[in-house]
Structure formats: structure tokens, C-alpha cells
Length: 260
Image (cartoon, rainbow, N blue to C red; front, side):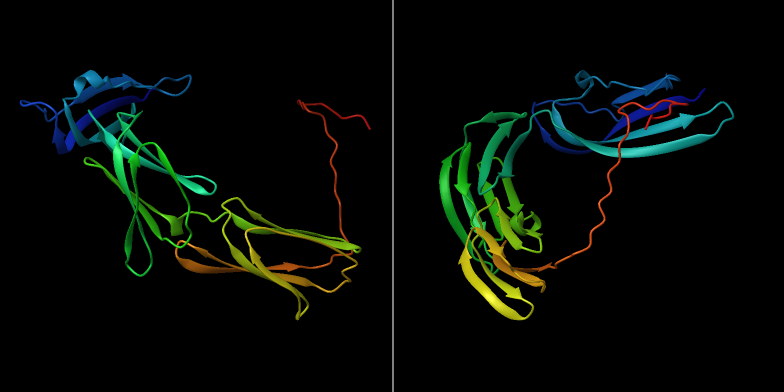
């Protein structure tokens, strides 16, 4: 409760200047503060202390107690006096490209490329931002370039959001493939080890009456990020289920008893 803080901010690596003469001191900020005993301690570092440059800096926080115990934590961060960046946002079935300067969207001519898993690069589009393209699951990576910024998005590292949902009763079986990105896929439905149905498309809804008590299986194959994905789902019939429900008050306080 009686601890105090020492906050030191030092520059590390300068990446870009925005003035002919820029002075960067070895210490950007130093302050001694007491911890707030009632809650979190907030310390504001004014941006007026930072020079006209883009650089990384180190923040060193030293906590000192009354019995001379010290704890030190170090964090690195980036400071941008002027930041140019390109955002690539993966939507449901498309990709949005946005150029920003200091966080504000600006119109900018960009070129969009795509790469596959064989090392081939394809130029897809030249346009002003913001712009949107339909997602092609054959490509592994999308790259957008302007005269001042480059940004890439690895599609394979993103979730495909394709999944199979099912519901099973004694009298019927319901199968639905959730596919927000509209990825084409092939599917095969089995009852035990006997094939019941197969097909190809970007959607699947099956509602079958009197399926029997045998286990059903669904196999789904699709292309995502330039790679073949295969997912298998087991749909068993469970004739015995335990349903538990809890009834309780919205607010519970010490000593409170709920009336039955």
C-alpha cells in the first residue's frame, strides 16, 4: 500500500524522421509516482514530449516498497509520429483492403497480389482504397502494395468457419453445414459403413425421417488457404439423456435462503 513507482521511457531504434533537424534525447520521460491505494494507478505520458520521428522505445517501471524491496518490469512499444498502414480485413466471403494515415482511412491506389502454395504470384486487381475482393480459397496469401506501405494476410492461418451441425432423435436426423465464407466442399454421409449420400456445393441441409439407431458419419473435404482440409463428424443416437435444470434467484446475498 505504501509502494512508489519510478517510470523511465528511453528511445531504442529510430526508423524514420519527419523534419530536417530532429533531436532525440536519451531519456524521453521520467517520473516518480505513488501507487493509488484505492485502485489502479494511471500515469499519462504526453505525446508532446516525443520528437517528430517514428521509433521504438523502452518503458522501465520500478516499484519500490518501504522496506527497500524493488520489482522491475520492462516493456517495449512503438511510437509513430506519422503512420502509414494498410489494413486487410477478412469478412465472411470477401476481403476488405483499407489504407490509413494516422488511423484515418484515405483513398490510395494499391495493387493486390495473391500467392498459392506452389510459389506462384498472381496480380488480381489495381484500385483505390477502400476496395473489396471475393475470397478465393485456392490462394494461400494475399498481399497489397502501395507506394509507401505493404501488407500481407496469410489465409491458411485464419479460421475457415466451416463446420457441420447435427441433431439426432429416434425418429429423425438433421444435418446442416454452416459455411459463412461460401467455400465449395464435397461431402459424404454414411450410416455405419454404408454410403447414404454424397455431393458438392457450398451448402448442405439434410432432414431424414426414421434413420434407425445406427451411427451416422459425415465427411467434409474442402480447399482452404491452398490446402485440402478434411473433417469427419460422428452423429450417434443417444437414447438416454440426463437433463439438469437449476432454479435460482437473480440476486443472492449472505444469509439468503430461497423458498421452495
